[in-house]
Length: 385
View 1 (cartoon, rainbow, N blue to C red):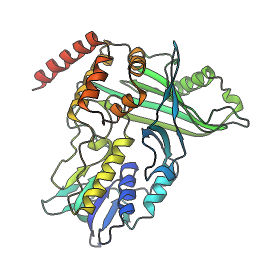
View 2 (cartoon, rainbow, N blue to C red):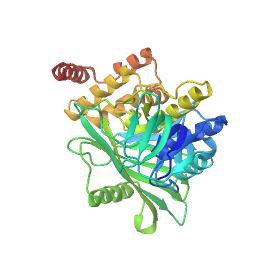
View 3 (cartoon, rainbow, N blue to C red):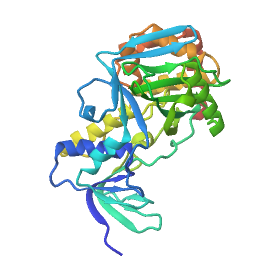
View 4 (spheres, helix red, strand yellow):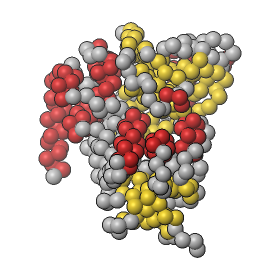
């Protein structure tokens, strides 16, 4: 048995959250900082797509597959075009991020991680059989795990997307469809389609639901085919190049972002998923940037909380209102975009708005049903104590 690898930081899990940290550390060129990655699979290729909004001119810009200054939100009542500047909507596929992360000097250990034990001085990562793999000063653990306790509302963002290739121009590469609510709505939840075109002949077309449970494979395919028909695409004339599936928790259950002094959780496990939408990427990128800044300054690699506490409360109220049928999901999102600048709504969903801006957004929602949801949430919190 060989001795465990000695490191300053060990990344447990090598997916998107870890790759963003590696990329951020790599940009800083930190000599003498030893980094190890423990993951049973060496991540490569296009296994996922992230779509997010933010300001242009970031270190990730060279990796983007596409970006848009204008996006559409569509409801049965009509189409609304949102002008996003100074923000933009962007698409990042996984392959270039994985490739960038692979260029760093991290030691890669291709093995499954079992226990992550913090003795107060070092962290030991062992395999499932108990064999020590890495000893490090800090562990950044991005493996998926449930919240510390079940939420009062537990939904999922779940989806299937087809990467469609056409023999002739059929897509508008200058405009993405952010949300198209003309899809049949589930009895308990919200559904929408969207279109992210990379060129006039290649785009990701996806069907998404916010609801308590996943669909069957056949149901996802039927929903996607129906959405393609709705937007005038003849799937029989297109080539399905790739299929993407995913499921992301939407819950007000708390995630334990620091289970012990020297173990930090990242990604969904660290609370980076926005409970009201399931969006995760922007918070992961913020976590990675903060970790790199702290390491440069010689401080512990501890990121800020992904979202303000007041935003998590607002999300809990919104989830409760949707789950209990107090508000219509399509009308709620349509009203939010109708009564506020798009950049304000998107910054709120990223957790970067001020208290004053939050109050403005709250005032634009249906006050009576949201007040009922807030009261119900308060009662439920008291009972849980």
